[in-house]
Image (cartoon, rainbow over all chains, first blue to last red):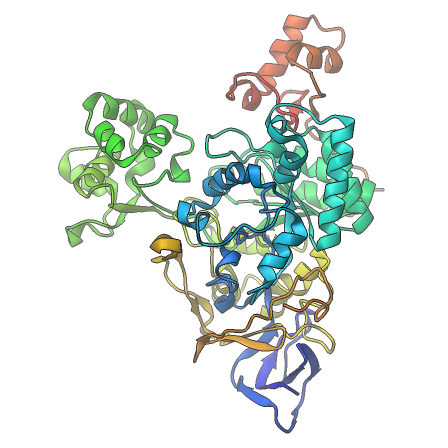
Length: 560
Length: 68
């Protein structure tokens, strides 16, 4: 034995009741569990009083770039996440010709909000092919990766500039099919596409130019490998989402493939959305289709400053245009009464600033008494409007004043808890590694286990663990992962059930060249093993353990 | 295989189709102007989008009015 995880309460991922016992790891895998295990020479990890569970699997991330300089995908690992799926939303870093890199960088920056430095000098571009990208990842990988290949980059590879102009020809379709097959052979877990995403110029990404027959042709290839199709639907419009569910069901039934769409949000503004979508999903699942809606656990909070173009302003063209200006031009515009009048007219139609009243001052201001105050309260005190106060504070603090729009939706614990417990819901959609300057996408599993299991009782601990381990592995076809059983990977999360949670969101300057992102540390997590190696512990922090594997292959099949 | 409940009808644009061509396909027998007007009113998410009124290949185009 290499390790014995001693004295914990085992929740094995199967959904069956927890039981007491030790877990033994050897050569990267679980070899025994239950009862008292003794083995001479084995290291012992004391799990007394803790839950011992399979490592969690996050099926919707955008760690594609970060993994190239941070093979641990911090802070995902310390939350117990041992396997991640990057490459969502039609975007991956391969296959990608050298001449197309800047186009894809622009798309990534729009979605991930990563600084230029993340792409310029933080790593060396040495690949064009998908297996070349995986080879670059594996040099320092400490977490397991099941990468999707993006439809937009496949289209770009085959069609070049025409990828955002027209339908594919028959020859181009065949070339895309061949390319997708190569990626799947190399280890891709499936194909991602998007019906909503835009590039840095706010123009549709290439996948949106693809006709259904193109998606059908690519799904046929997925069918040969039994691999996943992930899509981003028009989640803000119920009827369109229902149509997407039907399209996915059609492809799932025709080719025998799993499909998933993300996100599905609950919202007080459109309370009929979730029940209608879930009813359609249930109908399609009953017909044998696999259409998995991904639901995130956390409420929607968006933090922002006027320094970058927050997605909060994406629906306000005048504001978004202003936010995308350079700093000097932006300050000049915000100081121009005529320009500001147009901004206010757009943000507060008819003089109604209710939309902004609950936004709070978060930081970056010289007067500490402002922190936590709402724009509504400040506006009332100043005889102003919320949006005007937001502009004034930003100008006074060189655009560094920060704000938070909290609980914008998906925040009714009773409704979201019931949704998460639904047997047809796939818990995911964390978006980890994306929108890094708008909100922290880490700790959703801690929030599930703390808020919805312990505090709300929305689902049992065993059921919740199953959803983020064995269910996810089964849905995505990840062999040998997601359960604690002999022969399965030694991916283990050890935590205190009374403490498990996510910590408060905070700004961190750990991106290349001290770029900022919002993060959340873990709470209640005690230890995390990846492929049998202790990769993070509360006592010692991150370990240098480059043991991550490509999770579409059997554990131990690939050396990192 | 279990029956599906009725849902709002939709189609996807075919390569090269504009509003008139799609209207002729899904609303045959309806005068072109009237058919296009109907489709656009049922698909404001497309008609009001930039660039105005143009289809993307992946679009969902409703061929019936909203039910709710």
